[in-house]
Amino acid sequence: MRHALDFVLVTLVLTDLVLLGSSRLTACIRLVAAQGVLLAFLPLALTWPELEVAAMALAASTLLVKGVAFPLVLERAMRDARARREIEPFVGYTPSLLVGLGMLGAGTWLADRLSADVVRSPLMVPVALSMILTGLFFVISRKKAVSQVLGYLVLENGTYVLGISLLSETPFLVELGMLLDVFVAVFVMGIAIFQINREFDHIDVDQLDSLKG
Amino acid sequence: MNPSVTFGGPLATALGLVGAPLLLGVINKTKAFFAGRRGPPLLQAYFDLVKLLGKGAVYSRTTTWVFCAGPIVGLAATLVALLFVPLGGVAATFAFQGDLFLVVYLLGLGRFLTVLAALDTGSSFEGMGANREVKFATLAEPTLLLALLALIRVAGSPWSLSPTLGNISTASSLGTAPVIGLVAVALVVLLLSENSRIPVDDPNTHLELTMIHEVMVLDHGGPDLAFILYGAALKLWLFATLLAGIVVPVRTGNLAVDLGATTLVALAVGVVVGIVESSMARLRLIHVTHLLVGALVLAAVALLLAVGWSR
Image 1 (cartoon, rainbow over the protein chains, first blue to last red):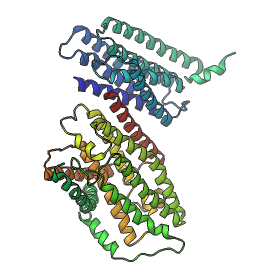
Image 2 (cartoon, each protein chain N blue to C red):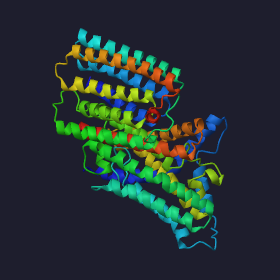
Image 3 (cartoon, helix red, strand yellow):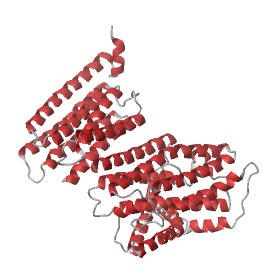
């Protein structure tokens, strides 16, 4: 199962990087949905030989919330806002990719410093940290509100991987609670995007500053 | 080191010297098959080389010795680089600590002289080709180095190409498959861009505005052009065998089996290149940069993962 776990982690890193390099919002939403589906495999891969009910419940709810519900909510918000692509991000796509590489390097270095005991795969902590950093960077480097929600989701996916990897006895109830929190947050953000769009006819967060007073 | 291995290196090099133009033939046959044509004979590249070597060369009065040195140094650099690249599990003729840097910089030296020769003609088109070649090389060279470093890290071997490729075997490849896969994808992009194939450059086009490599060698003729063609074939062979040695690691220890298997896979790489060329159009120059940056990122991710693993 170690190999399957590594494969999932590497694919997570790659989806992060593709996300940083793509401008179409639909593609970005699909990528984050794919991340959600990949995350659903993690609890199963970790407890592999025996199939615990809690792990299966977590996998199923992750798949349902991150793989199905979020993309639907976000695509709806995007369609309502008539926003197809990120027009001019603060950091261009190619520099973003290089920053993503830097984040992976930083994650590897940080994981080394943490010296967390690696029971499953030595890649888990570096990948989790790099996902958190990439999510944060995505939030600050993009202008569209939908992209910022996506950045928040990547950040949250990172904490999910970190939570699973650092706790030897993963309290699945805590993970389920977090999932519920995130679900509510994304739901609220979807509504907020709709409201911003109705009020200002765009979801360019950058321009909201200038409307004050 | 047993005698068969030391004997294998020169044999592998000789195989490369003889077989390299065949790879061009395989690519052209594949393209012809997809286009529904019969295509040029499999050995057309050999005929071309013989024909060109029999011709005289014409030199423009504006050119200097640099123009003549370009093809010679280009071919010589690639020939020397070939001596250090193992053919799959068969160790290369020469190997020492850090030979991968020598290989990368020998290829760089060949490119540098080709570019200088192109600039020496004073033609604006050739200057444009040189400009593009160097621009893409700045992205391709670090990618090659990062990919090779990732391989060395995964194989856990000394800093040399031959033991590294020798250590990558089918038995150990399952755990390291993600890194090997990333390196292989990066190497495929490199193979296409470094050997001026579609989607980076079109080897058949003769419209100067879109060419990269072909436009640089427009003014060369006769034996000079033969040297350039042969050098390009050797470079393609070098990349194809490197890729073959990584993707299908046949390490039986039997010299004939190892050599044959890797050579066959290298020819299969030629078929893949032909399929890519038949099914894709040349990318716009601005997108070539994105493609190469993508390959660079993949190679860097492979290296970081390899470092993370061996912690």
